[in-house]
Image (tube, rainbow, N blue to C red; front, side, top):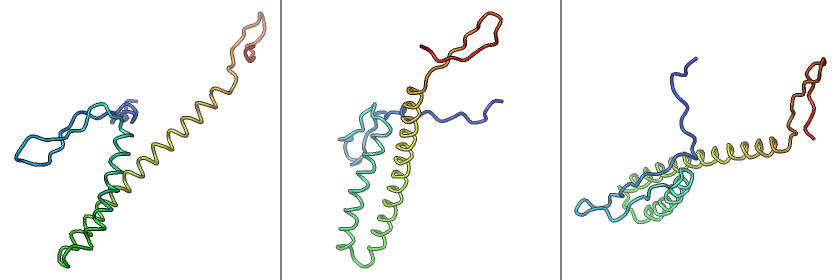
Length: 129
């Protein structure tokens, strides 16, 4: 049976493409994201930037006017939701990596079984020498 939607590519195969960081509309971008960075490294760094933003927002709320605090708190909630998404995704990556590592170690430890056909006898299973 053919699947209507193909499986997504494995995360370890996904890499960044070069992307400019727009900062000022009056001149060309000064910074860009380099091509070839792994998805996991990209997610970790995005989480670090969000943690910096959270710290900045917590400081900014002290200096915001009473009317502006709602905007600052809204920003804080958006940053925390984005951080929760990235944390959950990175935890999922680590869980899958840990399971894959355990399976790999388990497969390396179990004896390989080969089939031997003896004349006139049924197939028997014996471990390799």
